[in-house]
Length: 403
Image (cartoon, rainbow, N blue to C red; front, top):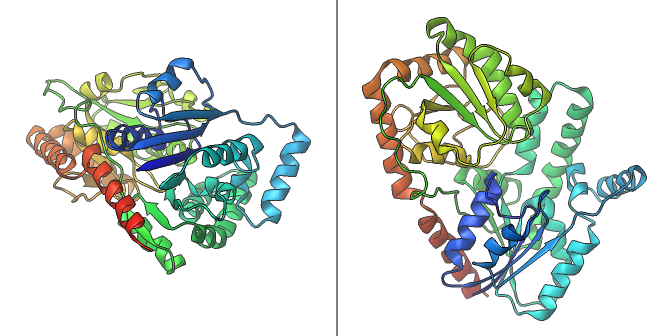
């Protein structure tokens, strides 16, 4: 197959959820198919990053984001709102360089599949000629109107709350309707598939979940004396920032009351000012740059994901599970992963229960090892990138076989 992938974020280095997914799926699919990549440039685009993707792609095209002055930003926002789109779309759409790159690629190739990542990139489907025989696929890494609603519920700043309210209400109508421009939608989980299908029953939707590199993330050797827990995620992403602050304020003090020597590692890029300030608190360590997370996993006995908002599937949970590490999370945090509470993960939605689960794992070494081993077995059975890539290939094959 000849496949064109249009992405918001350049897949390398794979340091965030959608980049990790795209990088690994491109690697798997490139063994049997020709992949062409068009992406906006990363914030620190380097020649070696492009060279890495050229190992797997037949062509790689990067597009710079247009720099806008204040008036242009307001104009772009107005165009987005007046066209009925969520205002969060305005940053990515109406970029002429991206539209031209897509048109040029399609004019020079016959693609079997054209795949666009994220619903806020979906308007670029307009640059695919009406007569093109390519099948069009939209990947929804999360369902926007669910994500915005949850962020709105926990947002404290009035201006941002109003912004997320607008995005929630507009995306609730726009996202399911605009997805009709594609032959197939791909969601990360069955939950997301059902939500999107209930919003628009005419959509053709398949589930292709996220995965994990089982060779890179191997079981952590058992070491005595591990008394730390960690949270991993991009720290200027609103759901992650809320999770860290919620854990630090409402959960960690309950744990510290019984285990004052326990450390909490917060690891991720772009920490907000509030998160940076946490580093001054006893037992909280904020790490902004970690090229390799495995040494941090090795010094911790559990990973926590106290998420209350957001959407999609959390790859960091799969990575911790692949290392045989117990994960304590919320119902929102483990959405889309086929886990069983008490068997291969621990789920809690109240601060007291969450803290209790962390303490139980810490104090019961046998339970710690049992949950970690079950977690590793689950990801081996269902979430390797080889298996996930095979599922996506089956989606493509079925789509090409249909009228």
